[in-house]
Length: 253
Image (cartoon, rainbow, N blue to C red; front, side, top):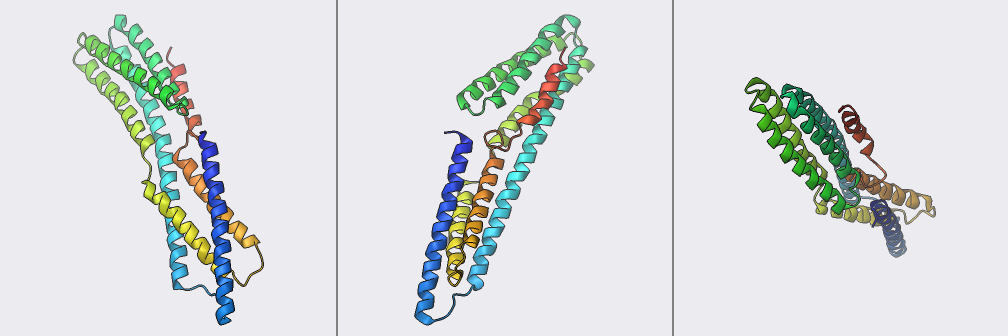
């Protein structure tokens, strides 16, 4: 299923559930008022639940935003690492440069395709495997060519190549880094409990606008958090930052 559609369904489902729990809480509040003749009032428990919900939303939202920015910075780091390694190929003998530079061009192409095809996991994995093969070939050929110019040029080229290779693992780990599922389960559970308490405390109100606003805000917040967590699949995108890699590729003459 398309990720955007899935997150919209999750947000819509949460919106409906929150409205349902608000209505249930309001009915309980009305029934309670009929029995003792007093208006339901918010207490310390209500405030604690609302506060915990706010804290959990802030925690998940700030974490998603931080991971979003970290992934953007890693694109820049990879572009810099590739650009530096490519420039240092000029330190090698001229007869070895042409083949290595061509492999670098192919490598950058596969790196771009791997992230452009993330909506199709198998296709993205295939491109990633191609990039790993090219990494091995570039490393092996660079080692062989460096023996002719050892030690100083090799000491400059090989660390740059190593950094270029290492950053791919760092980006994979960053892409897979998400909060445990229990965090989202707690968030939804607290949202529904808060809706129940809010509905109970609104038993004396005839207006429905507050219920709609409360449900909409919670649903939109959860949608944005999920979209930030998966920035290449939803409406919030970091694909535009790949332009840095595109520019590096264009500079490989």
